[in-house]
Amino acid sequence: MKNPRVTLEQWRTLQAVVDHGGFAQAAEGLHRSQSSVSYTVARMQEQLGVPLLRIEGRKAVLTDAGEVLLRRSRQLVSQAGQLEELAQQMEQGWEAEVRLVVDAAYPNALLVHTLTEFMPRSRGCRIRLREEVLSGVEEVLKDGSADLAVSGLNITGYLGSELCAVEFIAVARHDHPLHRLQRKLSVQDLQGHMQVVVRDSGQRQPRDAGWLGAEQRWTVGSLATSVAFVSSGLGFAWLPRHMMERELEDGTLRPLPLVQGSIRRILFHLYTNHAKPLGPATRILMELFRTPPPQTA
Image (cartoon, rainbow, N blue to C red; front, side, top):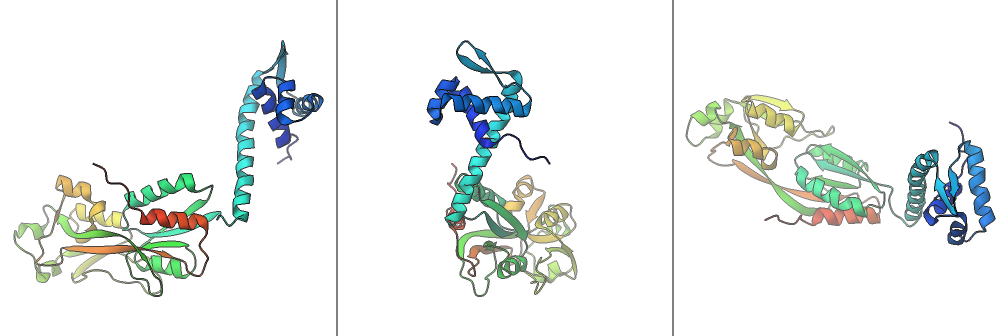
């Protein structure tokens, strides 16, 4: 790629001439001499080989080419200003990026709300989001690959802040043989049917979560796949309520009437990487996670 022949300062000068309506006015606004401003724009046109302005009376007016180039240059100058501002913020300790790992069972609506609230306060700080299951979150946090972690597990050696409880409900398709029994279901009833479970994404010490007493068991890679399988009648599972609200509402899935344990409440916590000092952007994001969204009427 060729090095640019026109500098940002030249583009700023052209913008000032157009915005102020002339060379004299631009010179006054830029605290420069009129001859300096005129020379800068003339030199730009010479370097680009394209006429940018024409004089109508006492006013400088953009040519068609000038309009296109000025419009693009405004984006360029704005981005350069943002880059300089970001550098200044980083010098003051503002992070360029926050690494976030979240258990896949955490409600997506809450995550979206938090990140939406963070965006206007981010000052250009990026979010690197990673989804894991069960001990996968713990491994990423302990590896130092995350600044913040949201998990439903108690992570040894870390103090977490309570966020919310997620209900996992034992469900099966409405016409599943377990529903046709039309009575309270025992462990023995479940043992003879296919159970769908989600694989722990951790590599070192993957954990089995929940009841795993079925003689037949399919292990899948995501909660979304588990919902799809159970909705198709391929088995039963404990699934987060928030991920199957539509299926529960339209009757595709029905809660299993277990003698006990049909509903489990998993309390999710927010953990921080205590091996790394918390920067201002990370602290803001933490506070937003801890702040529940407003209740809608």
